[in-house]
Image (cartoon, rainbow, N blue to C red; front, side, top):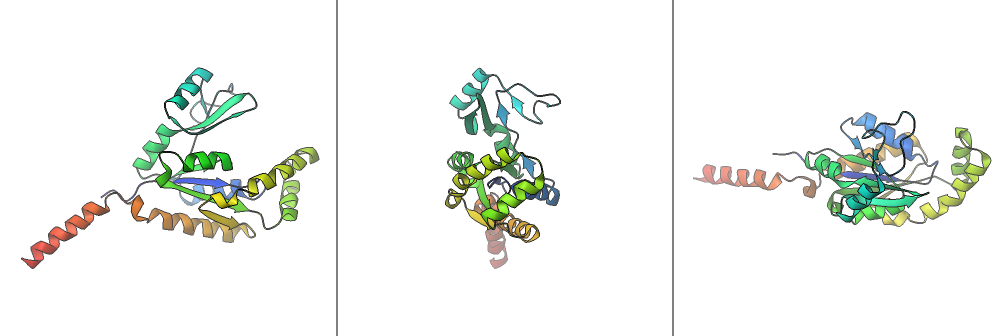
Length: 214
């Protein structure tokens, strides 16, 4: 029998809470986990490849895909459209592969209400404190103080939607948080709803039982 269906694994967090590091570790832990490649109407930047970095679409093609229910989630950001195409995700989970999404709470909500909602596993990652969140942003040395302030201002809006997720993890220790995340995914993979061949297996056991009894 087919072992299982794949999961749509959604990881969300405010910037600096550890989501990107956890995503990277997940894909190192299980190299079969695919990363959802978003679609966008913006022009490719130098070095970006269609189908690898993004699926680059015209605005007309993007809107047509949305109208045909071909996007799991989509948004209009700074003059361009972004979204998660449904077809490659559907193909992956039908083949038993998990697909990882790095989206905000709005994207998570849309995916959780989509036609693939039965296969969604959503996890929100919290920092241990706001003070620690700021420290992590500053220690990265990637952003100016102005950008850090903007990220901090946005963080509470993101945190306020914590209760819309299946699981919430407080990332006070990266290694321990990662172990908890792996445990969640391992358990979700074993849910009966993720095992399409189980009914046939039970029928086989039943037929074998009848033969033995006879």
